[in-house]
Amino acid sequence: MGIERSNPVGGPGAGLGAGLPGARRLLAGGDAALAGVGGDAALAGVGGDAIGLKERLRAWAHECGFSQIGISGIDLASAEPGLAAWLQAGFHGEMGYMARHGLKRARPAQLVPGTVSVISARMDYLPRGPAADAPGDASSGDAAGGPPRWARHEMARLARPEEAVVSLYARGRDYHKVLRQRLQQLADRLAAQVGPFGHRVFTDSAPVLEVELAVRAGLGWRGKHTLALSRDAGSLFFLGEIFVDLALPADLPGEAHLPSAPGLLAGPRSDSPTGRPPPLSPVGLSAGHCGTCSACLTACPTGAIVAPYRLDARRCISYLTIELHGSIPPALRPAIGNRIYGCDDCQLVCPWNKYARLSALPDFDARAGLGDGTTLLALWAWDEPEFLRRTEGSAIRRIGYARWRRNVAVALGNAVRASAAATAAERAAIMAALAAGRDAADDLVREHIDWALAQADAPR
Ligand code: SF4
Ligand code: SF4
Image: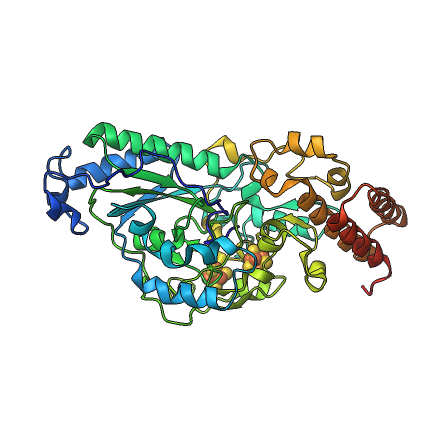
């Protein structure tokens, strides 16, 4: 999943929308309405009472495919020390765009002048399919109260080295496209009600502290794995935002919205130019409903969650397989296993994800070749035209063919090393396929192929 995690990584581009030219729409309440988060007065003259408008907004959001929306103001000052410390620690790795934007991501009105309120929206993405079972139903766990069937299914896939595992959020259509389009539809519905207003929509596409905004909008809390968590929906959802120059009445912050404590680091899981970013979170919201649980810290294959709410993106498999452009550090390659694009482990073990909800849209259904039963060898056989064809409209396409091959090569090397469970013939087939791909590979991929071939002699 992404950097301000709950959403994938978006590029420096921005959202869509009308923009905020000169920016402030004067509501009937005049400047008073822009002075902060208003109540009914702020919306007087823009089409009725504030509560009624919020109810209509919620209804429109559902019609647009969102499961929940919330409204916050723009004061993220308490998040700034954590963000600054996270950047200072270098936990953002090669994600230079994070450092470039600096504290701007904690200051929505600097990003879009005139912004006074933010509408945060949640869209569930657990792919529909045979492995998914009655999400939202607490009884979907096993007899001992363990993970739900879909999570156990994913864990079983991770234990089969020859399979290729793509993060759940990336198996269907690129969420950037889906959310932007639907956020804009929602903004258009609002404009039809209140008249033209300044706005821009974002989904992991600009320096936006999505989780911070979502928590302030009452959508949940930040879990120890740094993702946004909802009591009703776990963490398998995307976030999107509409920055508006309307002073909308804010919702109550999520339970456990606490001021950031300096030194509490997590990383933003958004704002990467590629896919759902790794979980970092530069801020320090704590508490929530994690309680004494630490399952995500224990489950992380690379030890990337270095402390509760504190993620070193440089160790995160989402970063390594998506954000990182160059060579994956050899010391971390074995822990990547068969994960070829992103990682869900910290979410698979999270007890709140027994409430994860199936996507309401077909867009996030797994495509052929990216879901169940896909083998590493089948993906290794893709040439570049086939990669481009298969990933058209998918977030995966953003990493390009070379990084894709790099990732699959690492997973094949891990399959070779773990092949005690495989037959000699299967192992030989992997070695032959790797060797056959060596000559045509560029330097980056060839180095990973050589590492993979060497795994035949590595200690198991
Ligand atoms: S389990 Fe660890 S490596 Fe995987 S996404 Fe979570 S933090 Fe990253
Ligand atoms: S696994 Fe436990 S500690 Fe981690 S986010 Fe979920 S509830 Fe919180």
